[in-house]
Amino acid sequence: MNKKRDSAIAVSDARGVRTLHVGGEAIQSAMRLDDPFALALDYTRCMMAFLLFCPAPREALMIGLGGGSLPKFFYRRFKETSIRVVELDPRVVVAAREHFALPPDGERLRVDIGDGAEALAPECCDLLVLDAFQDELHVPRLASSEFYDGAFLALREPGAMVVNFMDDDPRFDQTLERLERAFGGAVLAMKALYDPNVLAFAFKGLPGRVPWEALRRRAGRLQARLDLPFGRYVSRLRAMNRWNATELYIG
Image (cartoon, rainbow, N blue to C red; front, side, top):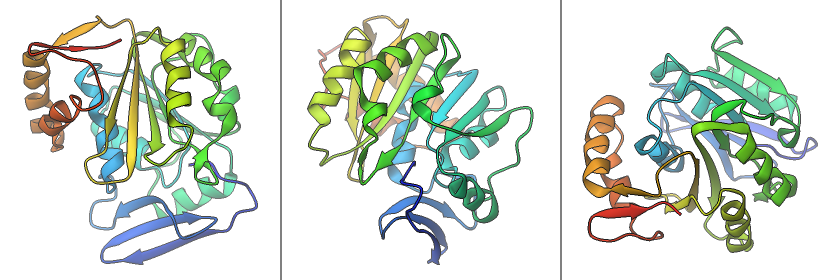
């Protein structure tokens, strides 16, 4: 996650988990020492629910690095996906490489130092992941109507954008409305299973309705492949979105 450049960066180990702290005690990223490429935090695992709708991303753009949990997971588990990460603070990149097993730049992974608000280009990716905070709130430029409009244009079809929110964000409703306007209403929201986070999934080029039976079949395949509780994600999608007995509405 992006933080102010003058915030202190700290790394700590406890009970087999290494954590990254930027500017305070809040955990910005976590890594299991016995499995550095796993997703240690619940909310990062829940972000993978987008795979129920876009199961084979080819080019991912991630804004906000933290300890590199998400790019590492994709690097290890999605061999056909190329990953570009944009991180504002170069010290975070150094910490991720020195303490969190982030692989070096290569053909499939690249980390750039820069402003995520300036990282978008038309049809530059089919997966856009936004996990960037400043003082526990979204970076304003990365939650603006202009940024979300650019995000829509940045996605190829079919494509997905995943945005992490804190569940006590006072601007959540307003920000979600902006996201819905930019994506023509094709947005789903889901509370994390355990962490105090809400994930928003915005889609481009997908049908407006998806049968529950199709989602359950996809969940079974993904759960067997990735060992994540996709069946629970399917159920969780009922809480914050429109649906009927047979279909989930996207938009």
